[in-house]
Length: 104
Figure 1 (cartoon, rainbow, N blue to C red):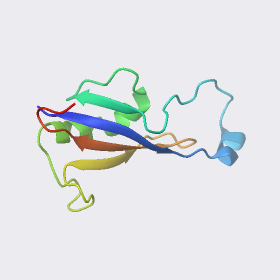
Figure 2 (cartoon, rainbow, N blue to C red):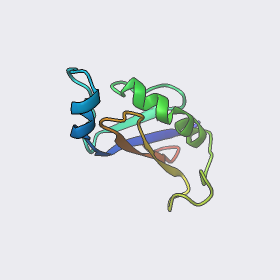
Figure 3 (cartoon, helix red, strand yellow):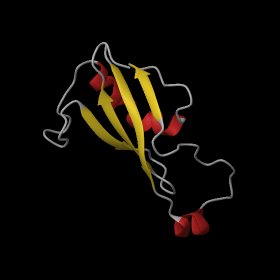
């Protein structure tokens, strides 16, 4: 099974939706742009948000098992995927990339 590199690419915050619909919470998201995680198959990387992992784990597993060309030509790099978490107030976009067998 291959390792998959997960890079935090972008986070958007919808203050208007937060003000209108969200109850005040502390530490809603701890992801930082440029942050990198390495996934070993189905195992959630340490420090990865549970909600984000649920959004991407099937894609990570597909790439870890050698899957390519997710959604038929969607990505320029066939061994990658761009996935966002399901937080409607502050979605985070993650780049998933299959690593070479000896890379980390």
